[in-house]
Image (cartoon, rainbow, N blue to C red; front, side, top):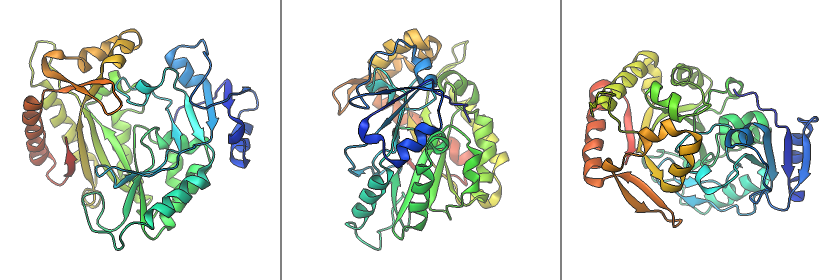
Length: 350
């Protein structure tokens, strides 16, 4: 796990409850500064990655609404945090904030109460669907990496316990880190961890400051043994050519990844492991920012001859693979999964 030791902690007055004070006490040498809003930060005079390494923000989440998802989960739970230590070149959280350090929300009890109230408005027993056959599933990590947050806020363990003990709800989150401290908690299959995977050489370029693909794959059996529900997340799938122009290179690299996964995962773990597949969506503003931050990554992410514009629900302009071409890519990916790792079901792909 990253050795995160912020030199400055920004906090809002309403974040300074018992949990906020406990987090602040972990960093006695850090400069502290009260701010009016956790999402409107002063100019810090730091580089993109320096902000992520040296700044921590403590805030109170004001809106505790559960939102419909229907993909990775039935619903998206109110965020426990926002931002991440990593600097992935395609991160949709970064693209919405000029300054984006890790922000921890300290009103965890209010967040779990909101989930409890929400799940009791839903039909029970739950109609089985692709997210889970029994429980209503809530994604708890859409705007952060919970594996990182787990070390920073003891409240995350309380959230795990909430879902473990809840008769109707189950948690899920995707991660690019392996936090072995989480192995000490037994969630009794009520917390699903989804390890994000892509070809290793691509991950080194675009998954900036995350754990290696090899390390993520090697952790799958251990997390299952600890009591987690374990899935994988092939996301984002990036289509690219070899240096000599071979447009099928991404296919061969994914076949190698699937074979690596097949060799590492035990049969009993394979029996419960499923996947989700999301092809790359990129953003024009983020592309411009990355030209200064991580220009090599843009050689893979920004390929206009393969992509088309799409206006997002937030009003920005995104780019995604041309819909006719993407249909063929999806079929190719499904076929490769069936050929190389037929035991790995695809819960959804788009």
